[in-house]
Length: 247
Ligand SMILES: [Zn+2]
Image (tube, rainbow, N blue to C red; front, side):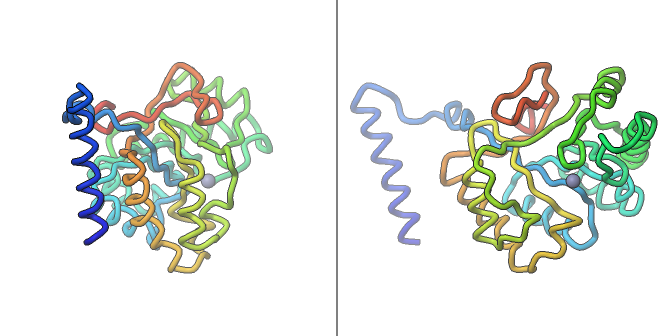
């Protein structure tokens, strides 16, 4: 409580100083121009964790992007419907997570098409984004994505490379990873299924705390949208983080 008061006082003082210097206190428009960061959750949905993630996001009023596996969409359609209903973006993360360079072009296409169909069946809308398993794309798959109007190969911010959530570094470790990769327009790699399910449950306290820590650093939360140009913040991904209402 004391800390909050200090923060509010500091903000008021900053506004006053700005006013004295001839600038104006922060307007709502400027407040809306906060740098955006995009939380992305891969591999789900899972009955173990996706509802929890959605609960935290709702409680914190954060919209995020979920790169789902088609096989899990088929198994857990209610979770996918909830992701959509709560205003998050859904992307394709293949049917069952093969390493694309190790399978035939025909199978790559099937992985993409079958997942798009499953998402469309459940949500009424086909995804526009693709994130390859392990981030490993192929020229035939990215070429195919272009022909069907999808953005090919959404990666993530990976400059520091601390252990990610799937390596079970604990709540403080995941927060350290996220804060180290945080940058305006960054897409942060997180998971709500598969490897993270073997991490201690206590690791999940990272989510609410990290959202608060990012807001304290001045960030607001956006969702991933296709882009025609390569995004240098996110390893050249053809995608950007936009305000949820702007998509
Ligand atoms: Zn994955």
